Every structure is written in structure tokens, then in C-alpha cells.
Image 1 (cartoon, one colour):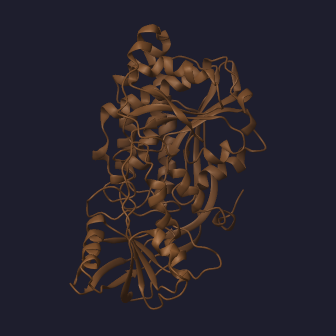
Image 2 (image 1 turned 180 degrees about the vertical axis):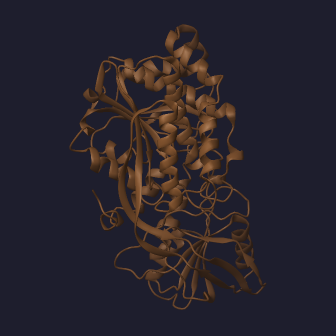
Image 3 (image 1 turned 135 degrees about the vertical axis):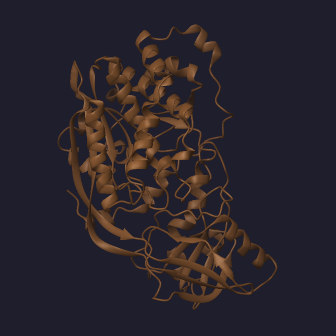
Length: 477
């Protein structure tokens, strides 16, 4: 089992890239494949399962419970520990078997005090937040002139040195797209901003939040330091505050700001994955893994990221359990811990299962892209996978198309996908996902019953069909 020291070496480059859905051409709003729906007779059991999901609130109720009873669940905190206990109780309540927690440890981090202001030319407060993993400013904060870079690429192309005694500000807007295609490019400043600014002598960094909203809520998220470069503090500004800064620089002003951050690492802390199963009736050793991540950032209550994924995957399991149908293969539901700080739950799962049953995992998928409708199926099964056609035939009526791009199954699935576990993903419409992502505005009121029900219907159909099919998932890898 990995320790905090081991995990610290596998942090956020993989995390942040994995959290970003793969780039595709932005589709139009998903529409039901009417012609195909007319030609395909829906499997009677799939129809019963999807009818139950669409008429129920199984997933919605679970999201409400998690976000109300637990709230924010920062990795390594007592709140995340309470969430694990909640997860165990909820899994037992809906009827899952073999419920347990697989413990691991992580480097603990706390946010602490955070404040910012423009000192000159027009004194006023700034709404900002520390990025996850940032070091603190000196007590009392840092006040300095700002060096402005319209984009992260502008900073990268600047000569090393020359920014001594200054605070770097990186702007650059993120574009909206249903698949979140703008996230990867925009997120480069969050991942590497502190390192690139430190190379050039800066005291600290502030960035335009990696988000697509215009609300005065800054977006947090994990950052990364390079080992050989001095660590300097980094924070994200809300979009309106970034706009304010941009206007001042456009007018040719010299801007001076003050930033104070009290963030700090607090040593090794406990985390864990919560696991429960519907044991297969004929092929119990063959495992279909589904899940979401249990931890969240501390600013909101983690409803969209990723209470929704917990509710959707657990809701699908509940629909199947309530139906009385017995899947041939085992359905394993996992609530991954410590995803936000480096996919640590995903890596820990591989560590715990690599020498036991990982080779028996026939399919894996994670719900971790919000709470809007699924619009397409993405495959990580290789070319010509007939199961995708089989699944699409049964869920096209939900407005779900077949995608053309590959997937690793989701952030926490990535580590096991790299070990040969086949994966698919039910891709949700993320056009507005980054309005809420990692902000105080990620709260339960953003969850829609009908949208969650559509997700649960799709996921229930997927796990049932994957359990019953004769398709050889491992044969394609």
C-alpha cells in the first residue's frame, strides 16, 4: 500500500489531464436515433429497468443525502472520513454485499486564510482562492507590482528571470464545449503557473480561474510544483475580478496587489475507497466496476463534482437490486477517495487489486462530469466492439448516440485502464459544467431530477447488458 510520500510523486499532471474530457468536435444537442429505435425491439428487462429509473428518484435522493448530511469532503479531512462512513451505511441500506473500506493514506493539505486586494491604482478587494497544494505566503501576505501575461503561453515564452519582486497575473479565458474541450488548454496555467513564474523570479502567482462562468466565485483545483524549482504561492481569481484586472492593464495602468494565503501541508492523513457489490449469479469472479469519487473540494458541497457520480452509479445499482433481476457477472460499485488531489483513490485501487482480481475486471466506467444528460457512448474497447452497438440499440431512445472518440473510462478508471481493464464512458453534456466546477456554487440546487433519472436509466441498462452479454471484453485488449 502506498504511503503519502509515494503518492506525492504521482500528483496532478495526470489528475488534471484525466479530469479533462478528451477533445472532440462539439456535437449538437443529442437527439434520439429515431430510425434505429423503430428498428430495434427493446429488451424486456432493459425496458423494465429504464422505466423504473426514469420514473424514480434513486440517484437524486442519494445525491441529496450526501450533500446535505456530509457537505464538503476535502480529501484527508474528517469530513471525507464521515463520507466514507456514510457510504458504507448507504451501500448496506440499498442492499449491496461485501461492503468495506479499503484504506490508504495521502499528504494532507489545508486551505487556511485567503485574501486579496488591489492596492493601486484603484484600491478594492479581490475574490480569490488558493489552488490545492499551494504553499502559503509569509504571514501578513505579499504586496507587489503585478506582471501581466494575457495567456499562459505568453509566460512560457518570456525569458527566465526578470520578474524578481513581482506577482505574476495570468489571464486567458476558457471556451465552453459540450465535452469540456476547452479545459485542457485553459488548465495549463493552473498546473504549471507557479513553476513557470518561479523560474522567472516571481514572488507569487494569481490566475484567471479555470472556468466558464461570469460569477464572482473563484475556482480552486490541484496545482503542481516541479521538484527543482522554488515553490511560490498561487491563487485563482473569480472571472469578474480577472476582468477588472484585464481592464486596468488594457488602459495601461501599473497595478499593485496584496495577496495572503495560509495554505499548508499537514502530514499524512487517512483516505479510502468504499466498495460494495451485487454478486454475480453465474460468473461471480467476472467484475463490472462502476463508480464516482467521494471526495470534493471544500468550497461548495460537491454536488455536481462528484456527488452526481456517486448518486448515478449507486442509483443504477439500486434500480437493479430493486428489480430482483440477478446479474450473471458481479457489479462492483466504488466510491473513490482523494480523486481531486491526484487520482489517489484510483491508484490505490490498482495497488490493492493488481495481484488479486484486477485481471478479472471485464469492464469499468466512472461518472465524473456533472449532472446533465448523457448524450453519447465512448468506447475504450478497441475498434469493432459489438457491445457498443448492443448497448446503443437499447439506450438510443434516451437521446444517446455512439461517439467516435476513445475513452479511458473516467479519471479514477484511468490507472486500471492502463493495466488492461476495458472501459467505456457514458459522456454527459458538460457545456455548463465548468460554470460550477470547483467553486462555492457547486451545491445541490444545481441537480435536476429528470437529468439524473436519464443518467441512472442509461447506467442501469449498461451494467445489466454488460453482465448478460456474451461479448468477450478482454478479448479486445
